Image (cartoon, rainbow, N blue to C red):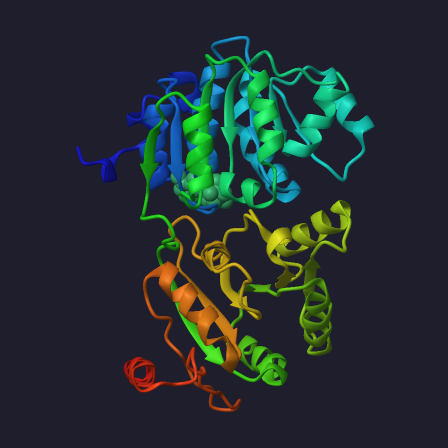
Length: 400
Ligand code: AMP
């Protein structure tokens, strides 16, 4: 049987857990689930190269719950952001509930007292950001010397955020015989370093070459002057009826874009670092339930947002880090659905655009709009003969 036809029942999941998984009513496992689960349920270490939106939470959640339901050990999921923690907890809860393992989310920005309260129930699964978990360990509130399964989720992002020292400190306190599963959208050298230093010969599973984007996302780009961006956005939104996620670079931009769209009578939520955890959760809930059709977000706040059925992702601003382009457009077209991504670039961002195109290994089609004037990307360097010819040739191909 080729792996494409594998069903959940072919992945080595124990009968009692299989019943729970089948109750979730997914028609088939996703590629990363087909590849990671059979290895994970054998207790082996796994490195999974996969973005959020590929079904990776069940890819590690199923092996973790299966392992814990047969032992007395604890499970630990380390991840970069509060939003991701809340979402991972929702998924894990569905799996562990019948086994009464219990889970606790331990994240910064929330009162320690509530978390201490939750720990009293002795949850077997901890879902934590490295900073807060470290604090709780240091205060003697949490122990990790009985952890048997560790997951590092969105490892590349945790490292980007400077969590390496905390992750190391935590891993050093966990018994060596543990199972470690690491998931990352990219295999950056620092991620590889963690894997080599802290894992037993892990098996690497990959669903697509690192840096590739979610399947089924069509992409286009409009090159516009900065002052034309909001008009372009307003015009573009007229063509879409479904839910839309808009990425901006700064919280100020988030405020501004949300205000412009409210004037146009759109139902808009925003999430960015200016908002409290409660406000962010409320914004996300409004977006998930459809009360707000549009969510405006900065990169950090949006990481890990798991909403099915986003029709359109708009990069109102290009990401500072070109790798984030892949994360952003992965918000649409999740789990087999198709979606569309539109990016707005200013004429002086030729180099940024080419960097992104290098990562996704394709050129993003440049579009024109019937009502809003578009521009061309300026060439990288003061055009010497060859570079001029090269960039002109490329533009010529794109215009087809
Ligand atoms: P994740 O990558 O874990 O954040 O999952 C992305 C989304 O895919 C979540 O909303 C899941 O509910 C959904 N999902 C997970 N596994 C499957 C599956 N086998 N089939 C369809 N959707 C899935």
